[in-house]
Image (cartoon, rainbow, N blue to C red; front, top):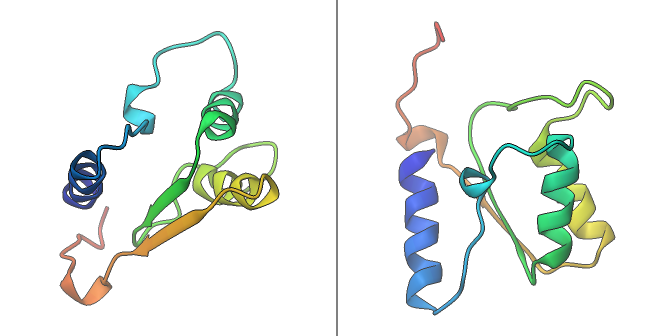
Length: 96
């Protein structure tokens, strides 16, 4: 997903936008989902890049963090852009 995330970040930089991705989250004494929601609430827009895997799952809900973020963004009425990775152009290892 890194090349796709970098492409989105480059586009946002060119548009003079400040992006806050999960890679900038540090260790905090609160659950990761609380950090995600706090950052989302402070954001003006939600941008999501979806790949071929479901991702990390929140033990309490059984949903992926990405799904929970998306649902929260919709609940908050945030403008939402979702990019779906073209699986015909992605090379991945099925044994992983």
